[in-house]
Amino acid sequence: MSRALRLTVTADTHYYDASLGVTGGAYALRSASDQKCLAETDAILSAAFSEIAASDTDAVLIAGDLTNDGERVCHEKMREKLYALQKTKPVFVTTATHDWCCDKNPRRFDGDKVSNDVETLSSAELYDFYADFGVNGARDTFKTHIGTASYLRDLSESVVLLSLIDDKNGNDHAGYTPDHLNWILDTVRRETAAGKTVIAMQHHLLFPHISPLVTNGACCANRDELREQLANAGLRFLFVGHSHIQRIDKFVSKNGRELYEINVGSLCGYPAPRVEVEITDTEVRLRTVLLKQFTYGGKTVDAQEYLEAHAVHLIGGVLTTLAHGTRKAAAEKLQSFGVSYENAQAITGNGFPLLQHGARFLLRATVKDAAALLQRLPGGKAIAAEDVLAVRNLPLTQIANAVMLSVLSGVGLEKTHSQALCRLLCAVGNMPSALLTALHTDNEKLCALSRELPHLLAEVCTGGELDNQNLTLERVQN
Image (cartoon, rainbow, N blue to C red; front, top):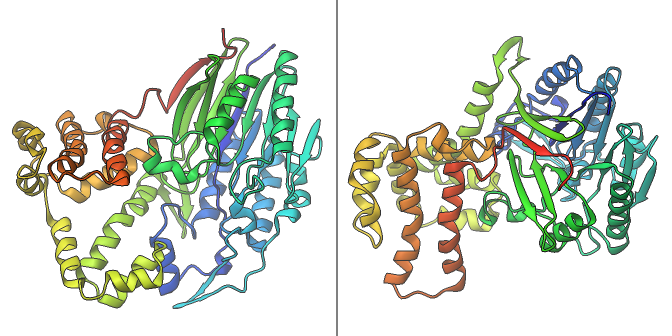
């Protein structure tokens, strides 16, 4: 390789067109229930694509969910942006379930009204619609049973891109049909045997990053079997999206083959990351770059401050509505997060005063307040008094926000907060097991949850085994 090959990888752009509504009560509920921004996507993507266009990257990869919910108008505007970017950089995309509105619930917002009369693109239409961003010029393709296509593109003499559509495995789950998987494995084996480095991207995960409690629902079906097969075939680098978190994990197959999965967060939600990849003769270097600023409403805003404020409103907005809103407002808020109408009514029914009391406590409580309660419970003695003293005035809502931001960014809490707080979180994580033991409870689901919680909190505190922001890997496994 005469010079390093440079790639920029993004995911989950979720383009949303303002014509679908960006004001009114219905839109406000929708926007406040989502980590990613909607009304701001055009501004955010314009800024990010401008930065990429001005960079020295050789190609741009986008790992699915190009649009909000597959609305035709969103696809048309997104494709315009891709064509504009392609004037300076080759662009390769894969599509995913949001691009053909798999839940059949496209929406537009007008005041307090939500309407579903929005034209969408079908999965089969995506093949031609985005053909200029991967399929055209591909050395090999596989047409899926839903009309989309995986494809193989040459990025250099020694590096190839394998862009994969994992929307359906034939059993209504993310993954691959048997013939599609065979094509993938054969392609990886053939290219690897020819001395090529295969850079793959798909939308869904093969790893339950951080913990199955966080990302289990974001994974392909049969994920354990899939990653074993892909690793043994020779795949070493896989970029994914979907979970909206920034994370890198390593899998080692039973045959000792390594597979690194790089989960790229949403470009239109905190922290608006993209991964810059530099491939030399011997190494693959990964560096996470965050959007600096964008112009919205006639003003240039700090992207990190703006997106963080939007994200943390998820927790604060719910608690505030439950604590100080009416039953009707609380029920609507819960529904905006996907709670069914029946369950939302039940939650805000006769027990609503108790729910309000709990929400008000959480809004005002500090570490000192929570520790006074937890230390009386089984396992509470592990909560060290000196750690409580060190962070005693820290609000619980601030801790919850810090945990969420850490999950999204991949930056461990121990790098942004005190060791005392991390120790307290880990101590609290061990309490459910102690409580179940004291209650002589052997419920299988509760026991599994209590066993996994300490691991989850440890991962949040450390950020995981690998550096999610800067990582250098051997290009070829020894």
